[in-house]
Length: 65
Image (cartoon, rainbow, N blue to C red; front, side, top):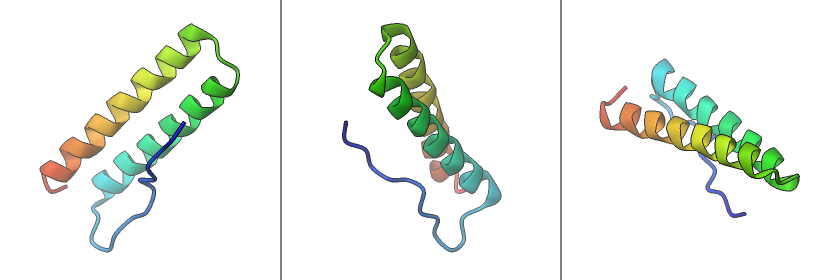
């Protein structure tokens, strides 16, 4: 499973954007743990959480948070 790190923060990130970044990182960790011991329902749920967190992060970036 290939991942793109999003945990690096840049100077000037708002607290909202930093929190969204942390949520993405945590959700990705959950997905990676679920993937190692694949139970289809757990993997799907972890993937959905990761996608939702990534969408929130992208929205925060677009809104200039």
